[in-house]
Amino acid sequence: MAERPPLAAFACGTLFGVAAAGAMGYAVSRRTTTSSVKSKPEKVSAVNASANPVSAAEVREVEKPASQEVAADDIPDNAAEDCVGVSSDLAGKASGCAGCPNQAACASGEAKKPDPAVMDVKERLADVKRKILVLSGKGGVGKSTVSSQLAFGMSARNMDVGLLDVDICGPSVPRMAGLVGQDVHNSGEGWSPVYVNDHLAVMSIGFMLPNQDDAIIWRGPRKNGLIKQFLTDVNWGPLDALLIDTPPGTSDEHLSIVTYLQESSMDGAVIVTTPQEVSLMDVRKEINFCKKVKLPIIGVIENMCGFVCPNCSHEEHIFSATTGGAEKMCKDMDVPFLGRIPLDGRVAKAADGGLSISDLCPDGPVAKCVAAVIDEILRVTDKNQSQ
Ligand code: ADP
Image 1: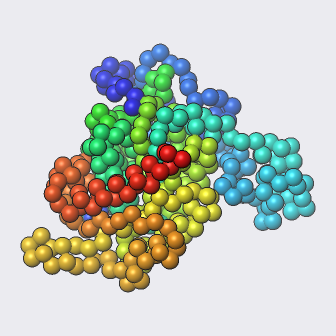
Image 2: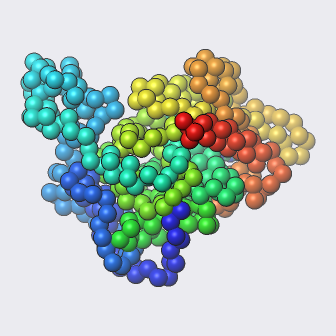
């Protein structure tokens, strides 16, 4: 892990908003490398689109056609309906290419070139042993809670862990890691993550908001610009595991992450769901997304699976598994099941207080379940290490 920076040593001058940084990063990093050498660390501040307007030229650059983004299935989002794919020999020349905004880039071969950011990400994460995406089909199923508790749990085993929150519109990790009000700083080595302790570092757009209640209303390309910068510019140092907490669903952000990490030997995805069918139906889509983009699935965690009344010990299944729950779905879809985490008010308390459930309630059922899930994740990813 990178040396934990003494916060007081940082100059707190406002550089320019990450709004602009993300946008600029997206716009120029196809041509530049990750490190911008600066002698003095500076606070990265004020992600507020209205307070830090991006110039019209940057917006035009950022919102350029997606031909420059490598769509995971080789077809840009804005392609003509019968697109042959950017890597086809017919790209830009097929009859269906007429009128496509990407035609010129495809015909010239420009669209085929790999994004240099892919190699920048590979270089930046070269000392990260495990790279794990945490996904969910639906919001509110406990994905960020589980990501935070997995990170706490792994770091308590003396593993060096990074937790990257790319849920740009709903960054809850700073709160769940007990880091509200902390700042990210920029130095010659890149952006310094914020440290919970010597073994756990966190990066989130939440650290860059001048006001916690600010809404982030960004179009996809702009979010992707920041995600790219999170992957290329954060100075994690050597890590045993990097957990990436993603937004729910299968959107631009997921495609970006998978694309940028394509050369970085991803271990795969951990998917969080509740036992309820309305959550599982979205998880099936998430699993099919992973299969489509060839992202290995480490396994599925069933969260909020049962509630044991602390007074009478009666067990209630609040999100009942009307179609058999996550374990059955895993069997049906031939993906590993990692375990269950019960619904427990102390988990919510731990999340709001930025605490590890193992510290709050070391002998409770949730701490045991989280530990069992970590064992399983490490068992699978250790296998990857030895391959
Ligand atoms: P997501 O990231 O999927 O949107 P969150 O992690 O923000 O979901 O969790 C949603 C809410 O559920 C939060 O209030 C969180 O504290 C609560 N929560 C998550 N898991 C549990 C659990 N096992 N027991 C009790 N509350 C939980």
